[in-house]
Length: 424
Image 1: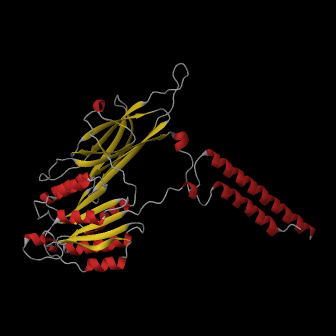
Image 2: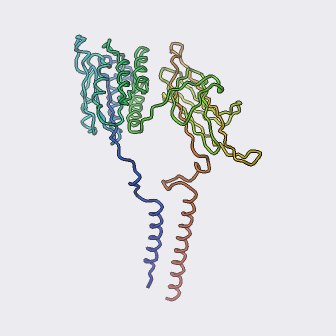
Image 3: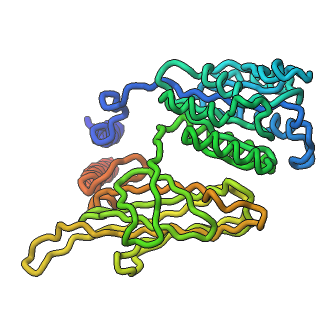
């Protein structure tokens, strides 16, 4: 005799079978081949100037140690991380010796958080600032393989070991074509330190950040370590113009530019009928700026009519502000009833409202990163894509059918239960 358990089990089995067919648990056949784990080396300045007590009421060294502990707790498991120091061991006045004072504190590899924290805890501000030799040593620590590689340099002063210019060292590293990015962070930097660190970062496609507080240091280093685990895309350098008519015509991709305080720069994108333009922009405050600022990204026609805009404001708590927009280009028919095929030129305006004290240089402009993407229009782009269930109206139909079948089975079970109850 058919039992309620059998029927309920059959209903669950039906649903499970449909679910398994629609949403397979594994897609190993289509998965990409596993990549070599990304490598990151943190290069920390331990020179004598790190004794200065001007970061949240504590020394720069104490702030760096605190930030490192927080960073080490948050390092993704797939990242192979190492730590190198500069100026940590030689306290004397011999320049030749002091300019060789760089050493790997923790080897690049799977992270043992306890061992790494213990190694950092032993550091004390000591000697010189051999940034160039430290970068060469870090590049050597990361050599080999095809992994994503990143150096994060944290220092409070400019190199003291010229003529080995660290900016030239960074250019030489970039020229080797090993795709090694150097990001720099300046702890309460002066103008000379800031310029040198900007030069180092720009030479390899990295970023520069000025740090005034412990939370800023730990937060930024965490971002950079996390970024190493993501695919590396090198932005294409471009130059926006003062008006749309002569602006560069951009395709889908990531672009870099620079923009001075309060400037407007224009770019163009050709959007075909049926496509959707997705654009975003980020502007980094790579120098001391006043609080309260914003960025505007605006899309207009060639004749100046605004289509859509996106804007975002900041209050000094972050060194990066971003905004974005979306514009779907619908399809139209001409007078003869034929579908329109000519692309529309969309003008993109990037503006900012940054300002700074009179002592801050306005050149070069602040770094701009502009992302352009062109995807299929709303008919496809707005399909269902939630909870990992997939995309497309066909899926909604199948889910509706599944629900209908489940309802019929449950109704049958309910009627059977009532008939059995009446019989008894």
